[in-house]
Image 1 (cartoon, helix red, strand yellow):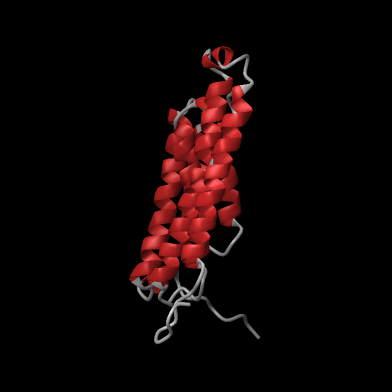
Image 2 (cartoon, rainbow, N blue to C red):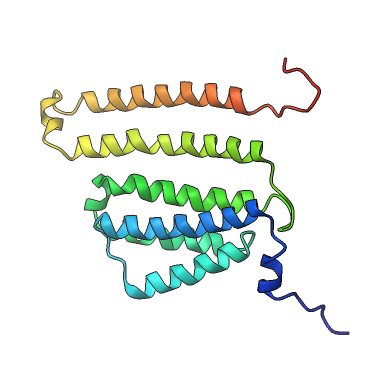
Length: 194
């Protein structure tokens, strides 16, 4: 007995709905932005890593339910590990958005078989959750900037930084509570929202 033959990838792509194609293209775009952000943020990105990440991104776009997505996320994190100066660079926010973009695009693409259409309400809900998750990076980045800047000495010897971080986390928690309450219920046709 021989194993069943798999259809070539070219034949599969023709049967994918538009949402699947857009999610997989978004995964590729997010991976490219992650590599660009790492390079512009001051991290060192060797040529072999660019080639490997490109091939891994193509593999992850074709098979988003494989381990290629996890490997790609690791490859996108490598430039940020190379330098201490990158943590305070503004490009770290784009890198964070790229990591979330790769993760969410792969996750949304695997919600059913590749030929299945994806509900737009689900995509909007995940986009809102992704934005909320990304918003947690902003106060962390600001605290890293504050901790490494001369303004830290002006803020009563750095004692204001923990309070600013706590205030930022409270704002994020309130926003998260509001977003989850607003987008967590699935509306069914014909039923009123209670």
